[in-house]
Image (cartoon, rainbow, N blue to C red; front, side):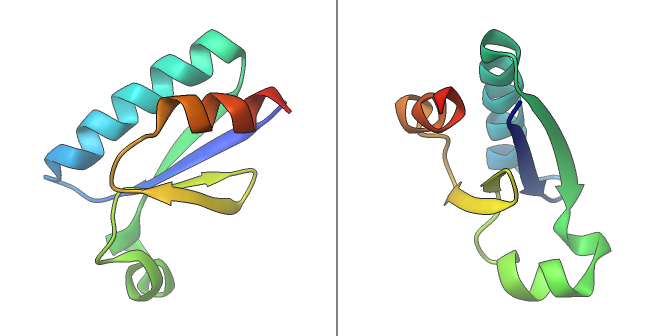
Length: 78
């Protein structure tokens, strides 16, 4: 089973939209997902702070800013 992590921050509209998209897609394909606040970890904030939301699939960076649904579904199908 694949796992998607959404790196986000509080009061980020794009993050809220992305979380909803990831939650919907994961529930449809049977994957799990979690959300991490980049501002709660100095290393995450340093690496991803300017690009949130960022999406990790099984721990590897998959994309950022906007969910590319077809691409995410393809990654979760393998």
